[in-house]
Amino acid sequence: MTEAALSNDLPFPHRHLLGMQSLSRGDIERILDLSEGYVDFNRKGGPRRDALSGRTQINLFFENSTRTLTSFELAGKRLGADVINMNTEVSSTKKGETLIDTAMTLNAMHPDILVVRHPDSGAVALLSQKVDCAVVNAGDGKHEHPTQALLDALTIRRRLNRLEGLTVAICGDVAHSRVARSNIHLLNTMGARVRVIAPPTLLPTAVAQLGVEAYTDMRAGLEDVDVVMMLRLQRERMSGAFLPSVREYYHYYGLDHEKLACAKPDALIMHPGPMNRGVEIDTDVADDIHRSVIREQVEMGVAVRMAVLQLLTPQQGNG
Ligand code: CP
Image (cartoon, rainbow, N blue to C red; front, side):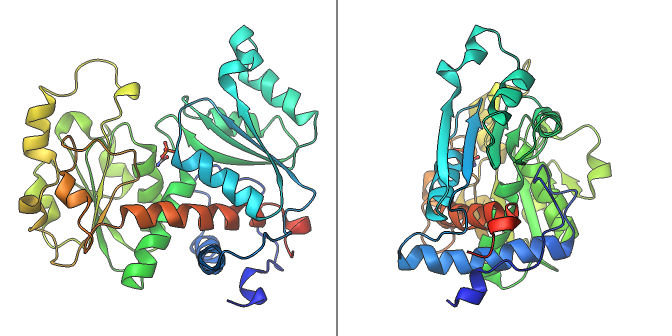
């Protein structure tokens, strides 16, 4: 790894990262290329860099998170930022303060970057209009989770050497999934072919407009795909009954070795986490050391978030 691989001389043409729809193919390639350098950097375990030295990053999560919150914290610290994880459970939002008032309060403390997760679609974009710093969407409702799509793309690109021309199946609760939406935008932009596979009740209403092929039969949808991306049932975003039973869902849509046999023999198995074993994925498939890249996705998350933080703070991005 060379220092040049981690440098950031060219301006990045975006102030915030709110979704994948606003990123061009060149923007995505730039983030992935810089992330590659950070994969090597993280594996080597050297001293922290100073690209964000003197910068303040506030992580503001109104929803639970293990992977995204921890990796954004690690990413900021490995770049030398002062990182604050705001505990929204004990914040003044519990006393009735609105999201916008909270954002403007934090803005008055002059952070350089806010990383925000919120249960409402569009909340992070709204917040970004009220602050002076860069804002990263760490997941808003069922809208977008852009850094998840970027880390998924990095994982695929490293394993299969390309994104263009691949066929990727996104399976499960597509209707409530911000991960699915961000991945669909990214994969379409990069020239991959995207299939979504779900029961009719868990397909988005305007699925045809997303530029995907929709399947309700898992085996038909998995035929000859290069990548199988499984999704959790997002019960926290469901209102009403979408499934007869979990047992029936697993029978028809749970990924086991028998259904996986429809995909290409070397197809990658992916899951953004958290997984519900025995619901959307069989435990043997999830832990298949030859096919599953689920742990690698987590590793790529730190590298991608380092790249994103660096690119969105260009004034000190050459560190
Ligand atoms: N994939 C993902 O967003 O995981 P967390 O909810 O644990 O952050």
